[in-house]
Length: 414
Ligand code: ADP
Image (cartoon, rainbow, N blue to C red):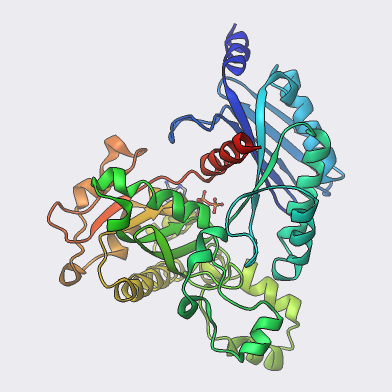
């Protein structure tokens, strides 16, 4: 039977449970940190609509699936129930050789410059960082405590979205504010999506046949959230997100860069409160705000139907990417590679072509045939011409695999 094969497979490998705990959902994967980048995880699942009348849990293994719809009162109930469903499928945590749990953490502040084993001290520091990440960090802390209670005998590892950017030079992380005020309130550029920017940039030496120290690159993570980074010889030197994930590129629902005075203007002229503005800029803006949809595929469909708002949104999205590419080319001085990654970056062929169109004078030449290569949509590949001075790549990101690898590394040191 298929399931037997599946359960058999479970016995042969070491696994890491990677948890991404959000405010109303928990996404997770169980995967072998030594698996290939394009291999499906052994188990993937989502617990969503926690605290709402119709909670939902979905679990998929490489051979089978299970779903459950009923209220989920809390994160801990959700996680416990997901584990119960895995057990029914013969692959519960107790059935697997689980060597670590890796937790994705959005905001690690200036404190966490690399992944760490979660202990009480780490939890205390994460609590202190809540004012910087009021939406994310409480859910992460809750997720760690629940998972530790359910899986007390394996090391838990925290991997931070911000760590990769702890190398930013002072000129890149400093905002033009009075330094005393900035220091008192921990105001600086932190940057996010670091695990992804780092992961894709680390694929370049293999693809280019050059040492990491010799490669300067610009990485464009274009998913629901979107950010650009400048990386010099493997070290991050600038990035488009800031104190929070709000600034930079246009995103699914976030504004990206705007004139901060829009806040004062709306507060005065539209009587909007801080919370309303926060919600507007983070959840009702970006592609959704401009065109009514946050999903890039839906935006493309609207454009094909001749929707003007969607077409303008697309152009604004592209324009913003081009501005960052230009800025980072100058910041880096010499650029060897530009990388597209994440949902939009990996799949939106036309977007990639439009984002870097007419830049031959800057040494950037997309090869339309390579860019559109339907035979090889999954793997990393070069999409520029051979003679393009700046090579352009599409590289699938895999944040869960990166988190699993870090978790294995730290678990082995324990
Ligand atoms: P998240 O930031 O939630 O991890 P993803 O990296 O999965 O997001 O990216 C989600 C985005 O990728 C969505 O806007 C989605 O429309 C877009 N996307 C996914 N597949 C395609 C595709 N085939 N063509 C264009 N856009 C796509």
